[in-house]
Amino acid sequence: MTTKIRIALLILYIGAAAAVFLYVGFPSEALRRHVSHRLSASLPGLSVEIGAVRPTLTAGLDLQDVRITYAQNPAAAFERVRIQPDLLSLFLARTGYSFTGSLGGGQIAGRAEVDSTGPASKISLDARIDGILIQQVDRLRSLYGSRLSGRLDGHLHTTEAGALNGKLTITEGQIDLASPLLAQSRFTFRTVDADLTLQNRNLLLRSGRLKGNELDADVSGTIALDPPQAASAMNLTGRVTPHHAFLSRAEGSIPQGLLRRRAGIPFRISGPLDAPGFSLN
Image (cartoon, rainbow, N blue to C red; front, side, top):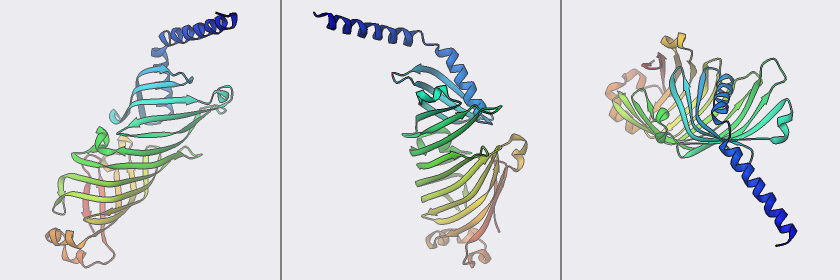
């Protein structure tokens, strides 16, 4: 065995041993608490809990069992989220990270930047949602007794004002209602498109468009996520255009005066999140 080979093997052994000791001695618990705290602080109104944190071979972090809650209610749960920092940015005031997380058979992937130049850190976010199956996500598939299914895709990004903008699409969806609406308990739809903004615990739905097998609908309005406003959290209005086959089944549930309107039937959804009221105008 030559000297060069011995040196190479020695370097390889030292590197492998250092990696093993780093992995075994990694301060997982301390870092888990720190990352949970930082993420919760940067996402107002949300609480983030992490089951475990382990290092990756690419100088990143592997977050396992990531649970996000809002007002003590589960919002989302990721089996794994991988965070990869831009190594050169670690020495700058603006630190960049790329991330990927698996959820419902799909993933959320994107980039975040932490700006520490001001008195309080600011986080900017740009993320893509690809192929999440709603029926595989506990919090999404069950909504106040109703059952949802479909594929969720979209794009999320933050603004300079700190708001979170989103454009979301659900395809091949279905909802099974806890209580029948217009004499029907199940509605299927080809696409649902939503353009929304989340800021200061208020969700602004600028436009929502549903193309369904039974009906089409347009909706807009606001949803307050702040607990003190829970009694009047929902304030949505829109128009629904039933298809002819659906009209024949629901004719007795819709006043004749509304059926004659050609521009769609106005409706309103208002009240608390857990028991909103629906009315035709």
